Amino acid sequence: MSKAFAESFFPHVTHFLSSHEKAPSFLVTIWESLFPQQISTLCGLHHVSNESSHRYMYIPRRPCLSAACIIGAYIGMTRGSASRKRGGIIDHRNNALARGIFDNWSRAAWKFGWMNVVALLHHCIIPSLPSLSKGYIDNLTWALDCIFTGASSINIIIAALLIGITMFEDRPEFDAIYANTPLDDNIVCVLREGIYFAFLPITIAMMFLLLAWKNGIRVAISESIELFYLVPLSIAAAFLFPLISKNRNVAGARIAVFGGAIVVASLPLDARLCTVVSEYAPSIKSSPLFYDSYHLPTLVFVGCDIAFLGLDAWVMGMVNQLHITHYRRGGSDKRE
Image (cartoon, rainbow, N blue to C red):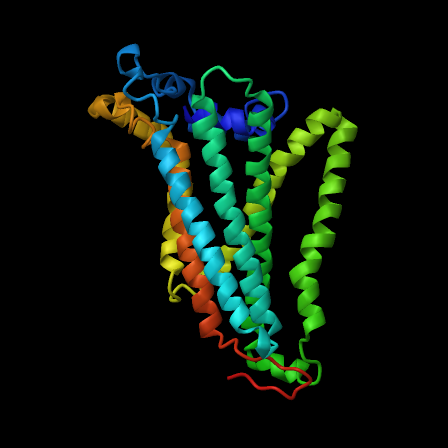
């Protein structure tokens, strides 16, 4: 089921990775080792028998993934609201860096929550609906899933940049070099809003034009949406990992790393788990409620939920540790 899931969600990327003509041989080898064809046949999508179809008619497809999406939506929306409230408390203190961190983290959390809501619809509810014309709705929810993920990742990148700035600003050499050139609201505003509303559209437009010139408009739209999911997510992980490693004693850091480890480990473990469950726990494989509990999509969503919960605690801990309560304004203000 994991291979079919990946191929349906990232059709162009997976087609490239599995193509001996287009992709480098080592990428094809990695793809085939992660998702061997015999495993796809062994652990395909579960089908409820006719005898139990009435009993489980209200259960969505991929029930364990459904639970992970619901938990993720709750985490994103509650933590987004909490971060927004906390950011509102410090507005009167003229602390642009703290406001930027809280604002972007709040936006990232809300988009993470909505991504889970759309993912629940796309992966679990819509496929289980009887005989509807689902093509347009399916494509819409797929696109929204990718867009919410990419947009959330961009807000995480900006929050990570601002946290990195505060770490540098706290160092003694910052005072020696920039004692007479304090960081002001305008600079922070460029980082906080400029990346999102200027750099981002230009990048997407350039990527779309390049793909359209090569493959045509319809394919370019689809490929752009896939890349908008994958590229910002990868950059966000690359930005966060060194920051968390350097500040691993801050609350939430180990939880975030643990969640990320589940996501990474689920890729090579997917085929192995399928073999083990099929051999030693066939009742799980045939269960209408738990058949997808060991599959890659569920493990990835569970890992993301754990990682995001840890990241929320880590971001709040970093703000407290860096003592961002006041920042210089013309050299007249002092931090608490």
